[in-house]
Amino acid sequence: MTFIVAIDGAAGTGKGTIAKGISKEFNFSYFDTGIIYRGLALKTISKYGKDFIKKDAISEANIFDINSVNESEIRNPLIDKYSSIIASIPEVRNIVVNIQRNFGEKSKGHEGIVVDGRDIGTVIFPNANLKLFISASLEERAKRRFSDFLDKNEKISYNEVIKQLQKRDQRDKERSVAPLVAAKDAHLIDTTGINIEETLKIVSSLVIKEFNDYCNI
Figure (tube, rainbow, N blue to C red):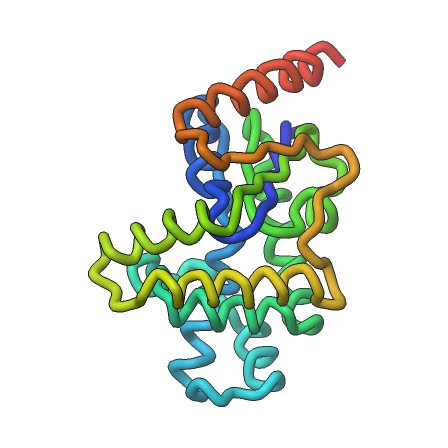
């Protein structure tokens, strides 16, 4: 068996940074499920344009190869927007669920894995050993995302980042399949005003406790 840490949360909450930090600290495998939707968004837009229809996204999902994703091409405001749109298509999510769970199967034999996304603890790995739901205020998330874009020389205003996050939050929370919601047994962590070092200390203590319990079963 493999110890599974499921981390969910909205854009800009810091869940990806937390997941990477925990995987490094405990030498666990790491899987950012968001790159699937981002990769799909890039491929769909590149092939069909911004006015693609649902059928186009489903077609790309059916032939998607996660190994073809170039990280440097999927971290920008355009992909932020369209990955959220594609992620709200039920047929696409049904296909992606299998890709995500296959990662869990391939990771068997590893001591632990860390998976982050928006429905990991509720849909993908509902029996995860440790579930975390990361949150932060809209303003805090916008500052972080805006700073990231500035570092990459992306041309976007702070107000536009706010608007995009609001729209993305609405799509994530209101989609008919696997909406963004905390699992009932998830630990809720608000990262507003807390730096990453402090957050990792909190999460690390939870991982140690749950992992020790897991090893003693």
